Image 1 (cartoon, one colour):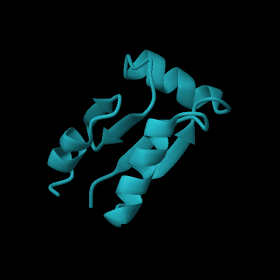
Image 2 (cartoon, rainbow, N blue to C red):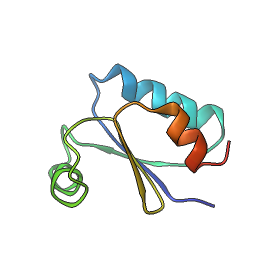
Image 3 (cartoon, rainbow, N blue to C red):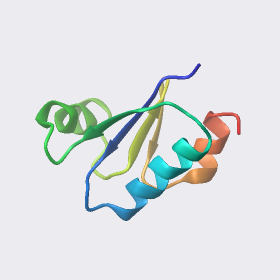
Image 4 (cartoon, rainbow, N blue to C red):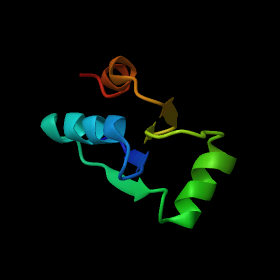
Amino acid sequence: MKKVEVYSQPECPPCQVVKQFLTHHQIKFTEFDVSTDKAARERMIHTFQAYSTPTVKVDDDLVIGFNLPKLEELLNL
């Protein structure tokens, strides 16, 4: 099973779509709210060099921004 992490924030419509997409496909994920979780925000910015949400980490791969086709590819859907 792939390890999936979603870095999001509440007022981000694309973030909601990504989470619904993952849930629809029964993919378990860990969500990090970067608006309240400083450590997650720092990890997203400094480790991943990502400055926008949603940012999705699938194992060692990153999808920065809204890109469902890339998620489908990484998740073998």
